[in-house]
Length: 364
Length: 264
Image (cartoon, rainbow over all chains, first blue to last red; front, side):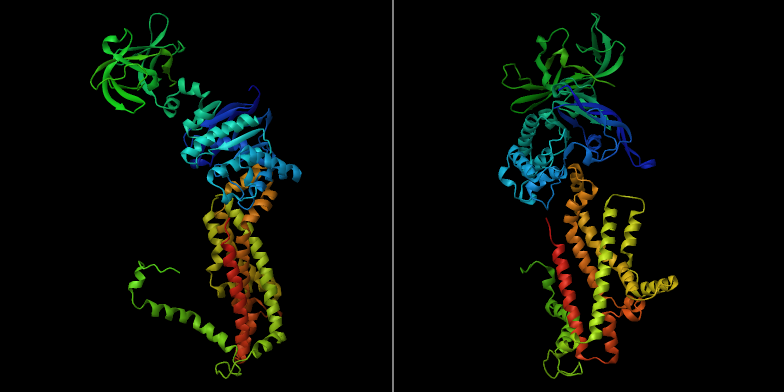
């Protein structure tokens, strides 16, 4: 996973002109590596599909360029790019059989009939639909069509496979199955997958790396764990999983470390390396499950204390809302039956335990 | 067919007789016309006995056959030209939004709404102004114009129902523009194209006003020939020719309808 396959350099894309001008991508740069499962995650309209379509050649960049293995792709039409796409609607050719669908790309590349048919069988086995070659797409279920779309796109052995929200039309159970399936296919074929989704769970489950996008920009790129545990932006922390946000002032704790002083005077210590240039008001985030509660009398010197305002029991865990005073609310999620005492009542005063590395200072 | 009892129409007692009157109004004249084509009597309106002779007479009438031949040549040529133009227009219109799209769309189907007599006079004056000699060619050109919207509408409807990602998928799988058209767009579009072509053919075959104006001496079409026959006096031969035209029309319209229902 070292060689760069796709490289976007300061790519910009605008649609329309004048008053109707819409910026879909704003100066986006990203490197996607060989054999990587790379996901572009964001809400609709964030530019993820536009970036995918630029890589596929279906749209032309307004500025910047996209390189495939170091060579500029700029003006190459889609049919000259060794890149294949799984479309959101699958776009299987309805007048062709499953086998003809799969051999379509090979045939266009001039591969001999026999060889193309062999490859089609191989692909059908790969997606576990070996007996379906002679059917037409309308005879297949949504999940089967999805697999055929994958087989068709993988058959020409592209350097990169683009997937545009391919699971969004499937029901939940099938979606979970296909997540596992996609990951398996990516590992088995060794092809770089570039996957677009607005579903954060999907992104976390499958990706080697995730790029979180918003309003035509990439906010953060990293491994799923990194994105989840160490979000750099409020949007990232909010979009992926649940997060608590607290506002306070950056201060030095006297021992050379930095800390955040909340409005009520309570101080949260940081282990994160925050530039000494930064000061003033900042927002920090912390995941609810990274927090714990203890009785107030057991709270340590530097711990936050607050009052339990609501308790919601969920079976596997219980969620507490803690009022820290000064309008600061904190959500704490504690697993039930994990041995720790997790039985606090509304109105009870509690101390909040947290590991300093789970506290992240967010970019402005 | 299942009767839906909840249809409020059934509460109206006179519905059956009204409907029967309505259908009689529509089709009785045609039924009478066909029936009288088998009439033995020279006077079309007095029934004296059954005969197929008028069909034999009609089919051995050289003038009638020449007119029929003209009609078919014109209809086939106009259909081919109009269908090609309509296919290209529909493809172009479906490629994406552009300024004045609604206007162009309206212009494409406007010939459906312009009174035919206006088109006929305008076309005639146009040919005269250009100094083009009236004949088969001028009729073909004129027919092509009013056939385009008939061919255009079913083709456009097909394209509207086509996932634009299909062409992108073909491009993505190494098919250039032409191959994508030939291997994906055209096969998916052909029911619409064929349906449009059939409609065009019938509309052209059927046309009187425009043909009459721009036809000239050598380009007598079947409707014009029938009109001429009636002026001399209605014999059941006119009925026989009309009945044969009706059969061709019904055949083509039915085929067009059936083809248009093909779904993948």
